Image (tube, rainbow, N blue to C red):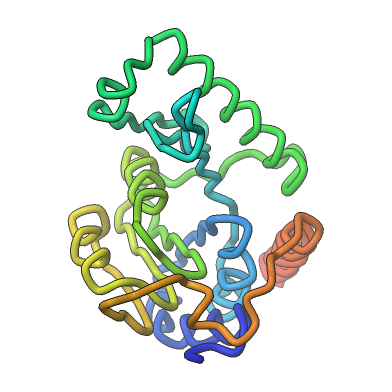
Length: 221
């Protein structure tokens, strides 16, 4: 196994990102598994932590087949897979209905995880997007495009493990990619962790609250 658990992965990722502490970055985690990884990075870099919620827009009669994605933000971004929409003969009305359902779920999850805290201002800032690993890269690509639209000064993707080919494909979406290990063939993200148990909603909320408290205390010093 490459990593003992997500905390171990986060600490190793934090060491790889240490040079960015001077940039005063904002860290955005993809929940739920990316949050414990990102929490370790925020501690090391003394950076604020927020969520980047992404939901797949599934074909109505085949929900596992993605016809797009929607990404949380002050102005949510919808990414469309026009080929799937055409082949599945999905109408604009049906697409909009599924999109709106997923947007509602994003709002519900944000309220549960962070309460009424507003989205951070990303323009002109160094942004680090973190997950616990990458498989196909579809979710990650949508997330990066949503962040890019908010005009950060530099956009960094940081993950413990990913497929070599997927990292190459994502190279055009980020200014920098930091990955501890890349493999080809890859398999599933969980195979690179000794402990890959699911992160609960309660853990996500607790980690975000702890990081917010830590940041507020640091700002007062």
